[in-house]
Image 1 (cartoon, rainbow, N blue to C red):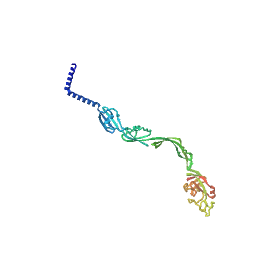
Image 2: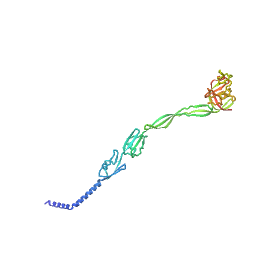
Image 3: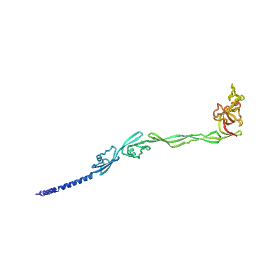
Image 4: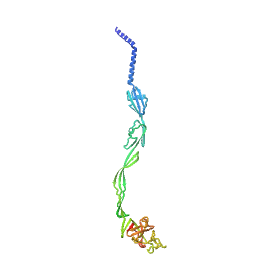
Length: 368
């Protein structure tokens, strides 16, 4: 009897289910659709893959990590490509994924070249990634601050500097200054020249081991030079024997003597009657200018006759011979070359006694 109420209740519930079966099915379908919608709303994600080559891929997925979404999108990563966020990062409702494709960069030095795949666009970052140590003066092309967007070559030139100290001799100058204390044509050294010494600090620049530049960056005079000073005579007036004579220059000459070559002068003659001094027959000797070879006395009216080198003293020039007076360059001789003269004497004996002497002569321009 105790089971009767329960059986009655079950019958009533079964009757209710039978009457409301269709309604329950509709409710279940409604609840299921809401559940599915909520699942999609909660678990579905949108992933946007942005690739630095300009490509963009949009993926709707239920995957949970970046790596899983990448596989689903069939996007391949290279060994050196970079992805942000990382592959193991969880996906958010909306996730932005950036992919940077690696590209080759060639780094060249004078003795080596490296190919490096990288996503870095800064030259400085690439150099650092390769553990290349740069010197302060090293040259990099493109520059360290340059940004790269494609395959290129970075050239590195090693710059080294060397410093040397070189000694340089300083040549002295010759300074000439006029003085009226000396005759024209005469000079004297009043101070000897002495070279100086300078130390130059030289900077030598090497590019990849080859010298490309050399310059003096500092100099120190260790010993100053001493110029040579020469006084040059400016006096052009000579006063001798009551005459005032202007001259153009003064010379020191080697002088010898000769005679007229006549029998009266005592000049030796050969078998053909030619004299030892002039080579002409006695009594007919003449100078190279046609003047008869007659010795003078050194006066203005009767000057000495001398033989000269016309390249030094032009023929016809009047000169003053210190100690002997005025003379005229009227003759030449085969042995008279340079600063040499031959003075005509009256007799052969006088010529022999004269011998060879060093004399001072003045090239005259005027006699008063």
